[in-house]
Amino acid sequence: MQPSAVPELAHAHTRPIHWLATATAVAAVVALSSVLQPDAATAAQAAGPPTRSAPAGLAPPDPADVAFPLECGPVKAVVKKKASGDLDGDGRPETVAVVHCDAPMGTPPDGVYVLTRGSDGKPRVVATLVEPEDSTTVGDFAVRGGAVTAALLGYSSSDVPRCCPDVTSEAKWRWENGAFTRSTPADARSV
Image: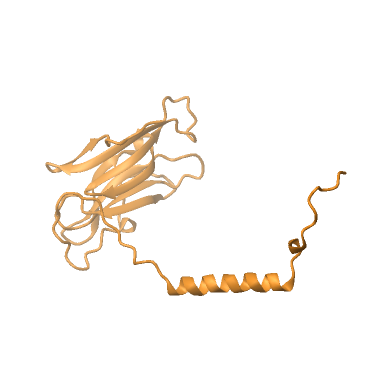
């Protein structure tokens, strides 16, 4: 072993004064950070179609209160994801739910359903955006600016294992002329 060409530095050994100085500095930073706070965060929703204000206290439909048109056999339907927003511009929020059967193995296909409140105030399914029979799984999913966007994961052939989708497509649905129309978002990328 070759000796170091640099002499041993006297300040390289910790002494109690070093710990006291470090503790004082940390305490000063904590105290200062509790006094200096950033401004309150504000969030702005992306511009969308003009909507009327929702009546006070009108909550979006709860997917837990709906029977989805999904045949699950002995297992139950599970709401995987949900998002709410005013999709038709009537001032009342709708809920979009991604639902699949609670399969014990594999990747069950998802259905995407739009819920609204009926005249009796109870939630009900008014549209199906993705059928479970399409054998797709929903990845990223959002309701923004009056539109529903989703990344749909699927299979290029029946030879691809159902655990491992190998095709991705982007979809966007918007309420137009009394129905949901599907398009591909302008910034969509596929894998």
